[in-house]
Length: 608
Image 1 (cartoon, rainbow, N blue to C red):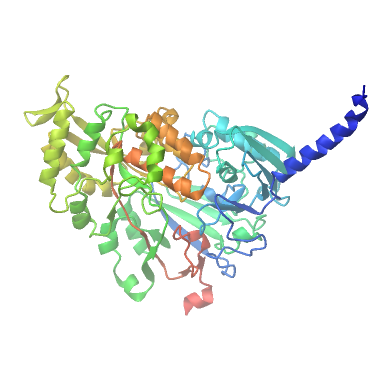
Image 2 (image 1 turned 180 degrees about the vertical axis):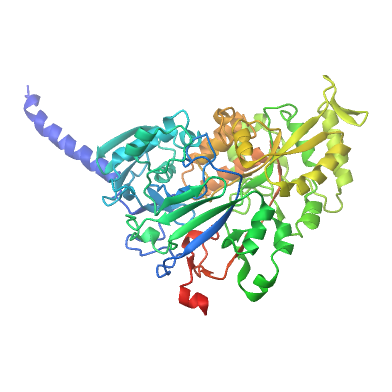
């Protein structure tokens, strides 16, 4: 008999070499960036993003206006407190997004990224020059601490735990290398969104304590530091002259001002008058009436102030009246559907907005991700397994919010609403809509924090009154508004649900059942639908761009026919007004205007 034991060491060595080769073949070489689908636009030796001007003059002050009553925290990562404006200037992520690509990330704190072909893990190689603004090096321990704090601390915003739910283990390989292993190889965007994670200074936060709102100035690693502040009035950021990342290509042409100041104003009217008086430099106008009528006067005529509309291609998401399904009567889909007939967008747009807006009819508005018409064959293949659990309209009708475009009108719409409410068990008695079983009157409250929005809601209320529904407006300050939304303490609220060109893990935070009753989550409507949960998983695991589009459109249809919101409107342009002392790059990315690439004219040319 042959002695096999003599060959064992040789076979073992050969097997180890073979396994090492197989493992190596599954890994790409460390890269300077990563694209969600397809190839990166910018090569490893790129000098700057196309939408930034690397020769932009440095210096001067940028003053910005903020609508709000107060701030009481420099920690934007917890569910307590009202964070100050501009805190993104303090905290940096591992990687940064290119604003002219669908979804690509390039190295910042992480100089390189290493991802296997199946995307079942990611390894970040940190830039050895990366420093916090107190001079301490940023290490893999800081990254691990940041992940564990953001996802595991009981006071942390729940967004992060949902966003990074598929991370199984975190391993520090050396002081500048960290690997995240995943519980699945189907979460294709997870390496990219881990790159979005802000890196916190472990040595500071372990001493300071993470969970409480505080105005103690934190240690960050970003281009600016807090220089001074007056809660409720202003906060001033000064550029860090020793900022470690100022020579990186991803930062070229960014952060050109020496000082950035955020001035606080109680309401939009006061803020607009302050801008026209020259108290701050840049304004993004969100009120159509103001844009049509208020941007005039000597300073605009002389060119001292400039008014401009800049086209963008970013997804508009969904701004809407969000109904809280945790509360009766909003638990009933048919009741929610009926209320939409009382909102007259066409009248509102013409009479209040000078016709400036377009109606939103998708949660992914203004993008190729939005569902339109009837489901495609690819969408039907996704939706068919859930057919018994879904409203039939998902398959048979194209979603369109109620309209008063002729031959429709508000009277016809209100008659439709009355029939739907009657079928849902509500009848008008003595001009009051009451539940047929309990006799309870149908009444609710609109929660607002901007007085400007009252003129939009009041006509809606009058139409609701014609249905026998009693509703009223409650305007609260910014702090109360934030806290009430965090606790889901509202009936109907006006809320904007933003989206990106590459939806994924954040959809859990918006719609997943697990977030419906978690205070601080963004599932404001309280959606608990196993089909929505399953479709979110499919969006996250999409293997390519076309699959992502088809799966997102399927999710969009199910959300729309759930009638969780009454859609508002969107505008495909940024309406901006600014001082003529500011300048911006010639190229605007698809995402729209970014003030961080602007600069102030040198004093000599400003005086000419």
